[in-house]
Amino acid sequence: MFSDGLLELIEAGVLTNARKKVHPGRTITAFSVGSARLIEYIDDNPNVLYLESAFTNDTNVIRQNPRTVAINSAIEVDLTGQVVADSIGTYCYSGIGGQMDFVRGAAMSEGGRPVIAITSRTPKGASRIVPFIKQGAGVVTTRAHVYYVVTEHGIAELHGVPLRERANRLRDIAHPDDREELDRAIHERFRS
Image 1: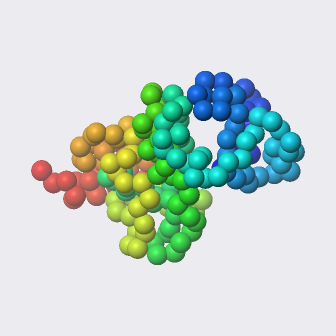
Image 2: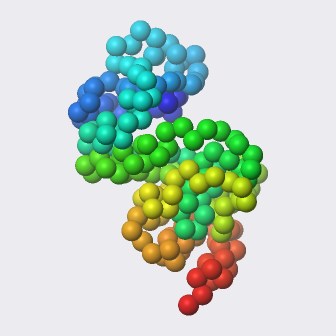
């Protein structure tokens, strides 16, 4: 997805696509959503190429670009690192999109990094890092595929880490007011 956030990175010179091996120098997307400014940028721009999602989301294509960083969001992440990105309990909030495709593609890319980026709390003040996912929610990205979870409070590196340590790392990047409750959940779940 090509959105206004991506446009800001391009305009700031942060994202150049210069090191890509597949379509170097060009932004590849299957679809775009955004402002009139975004549409003006995209319109007739030879550096933006629309291709079918069967190509853009193909892990074998993604992995060919070294140092791919895939940044995806989530609705909630449980203490083991399971990522819910499409539902709030049984309510389907959105589609799963290409999250798993890009998580896997970035992980297989030489020097790549798959990142789940979330705010520690929802706009209504609920913690996004939770002891257990809501009943009926769907796991989009399994804990085995999660490498990094990022909030405004830090980064939790999770890949290859035992479950209790994953829980501690996730607690440490939760909102400070939610950490005591998460601590209790960790103690209850991982008694040793």
